[in-house]
Image (cartoon, rainbow, N blue to C red; front, side, top):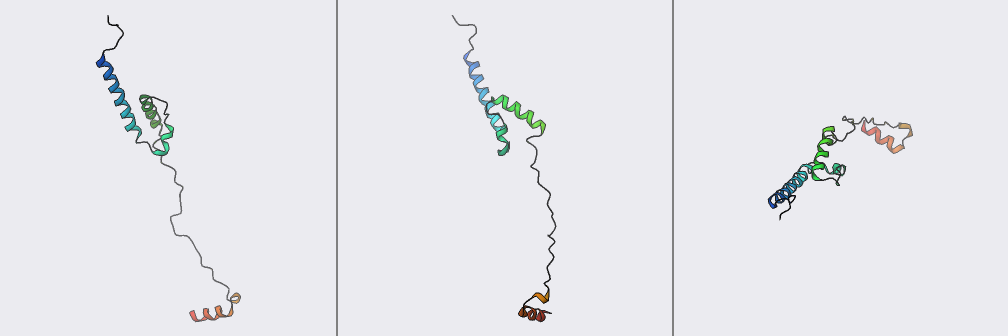
Length: 101
């Protein structure tokens, strides 16, 4: 006599196929998460729970945020050449300076 609670074999095979498909879908979706943020996704959850967690977290904008780049001065640096005092220069430097003018 067959037990009334037993599941037919095709249903078990279909359930296993659906679980494998869900795991593949979860792997594909979570592969789009940047490497430095993958540690945020709890590995202890089932693939379905991981997808639900990811969609809830993505709705908050956690995975869309770009790292903040501090503003920099895009212009050239303001370097003012220092003009040496001719009286503090050695004799040969003062003579060489006279030839340049």
